[in-house]
Amino acid sequence: MTKKQTAEIASLAVFGIGLAGVYILASRFKDEFSDFTIAASATIMFVAFYVLGQWVKRRINPPPTVK
Figure 1 (cartoon, one colour):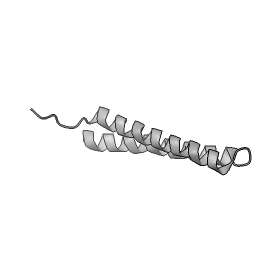
Figure 2 (cartoon, rainbow, N blue to C red; figure 1 turned 180 degrees about the vertical axis):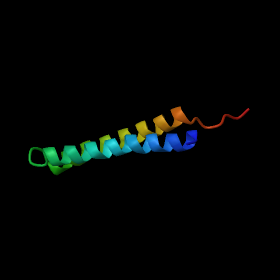
Figure 3 (cartoon, rainbow, N blue to C red; figure 1 turned 135 degrees about the vertical axis):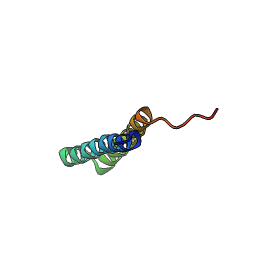
């Protein structure tokens, strides 16, 4: 496996964990909080895990530098 493939898989794994967290959050708190609160929290988690996944991808396979 190349570094690029490893980076993509790791990035998708982090993002998938984030999506699972959003699902768990929504199902756990659906009767305790308003829909808006759950949606706002889920959006923040979604963005955070997307950014974290991109960071992981760049750490494993950094973009080429210009000389």
